[in-house]
Length: 286
Image 1 (cartoon, rainbow, N blue to C red):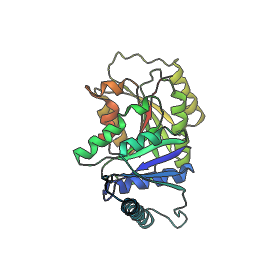
Image 2 (image 1 turned 30 degrees about the vertical axis):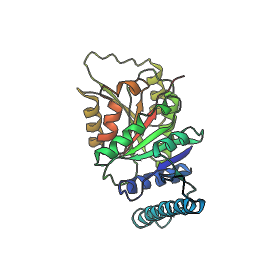
Image 3 (image 1 turned 90 degrees about the vertical axis):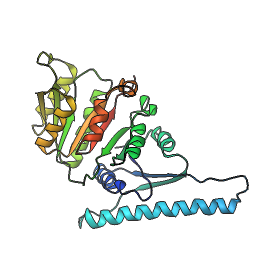
Image 4 (image 1 turned 30 degrees about the horizontal axis):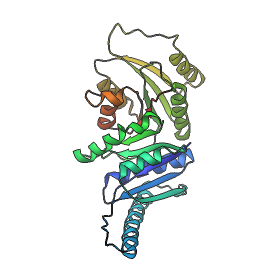
């Protein structure tokens, strides 16, 4: 599995539980976590090199202290006797703008997904939504793990993968990615399709459905479910609640990058309203 990018701010408690998810995914997937903190130092023409270096070090210490808090919480609340914090970390504490640094790191070929928390603060969520909508993802298949506000970590036993069975450029890769996660956490996968109208045609011969069928035939722990509903978001969240699912996976389609500026996006709405973490995979151009 590729590396996990975990961007964080100083003294913001919403990152605490998101850090646990980043660590648990890294441990189970045997991968590395990039810890990113971006800060801004205002320097005029009269600042000395010594003072600038001192200000940089002060910000580094703040970032390291924040990570110590994260690790203390992990070890006190989530670690088992046989589950010590033995993960490789790449610390990147940078004088810059967080969104710009995320965009830069996301272009690295060994970055798999980014962990982002949701808050009860509108300004914070707006910044997170700006990251989700960023056009860097049009050419880069970096995924997102969106952690809900006040969502405490729990073992991932049931995964719901919400799919519409439309032709996607990387459908097999999406399936492989979810199955890899399910193996790492010993999870069941429910492939969920929502029929919004009674007349919706379901093509069992489609390449996408046949790929899913091969998975479910090979392993009966994984199942395909097709249910009727008037609203995608409401139907998906209801199914997740009834199943007591621990992770929801969705694909963010290419056309949503323009449409979400003016219209409703099912993916964005699910990401910000879900009670469980949402793994958002990117649909990019060929």
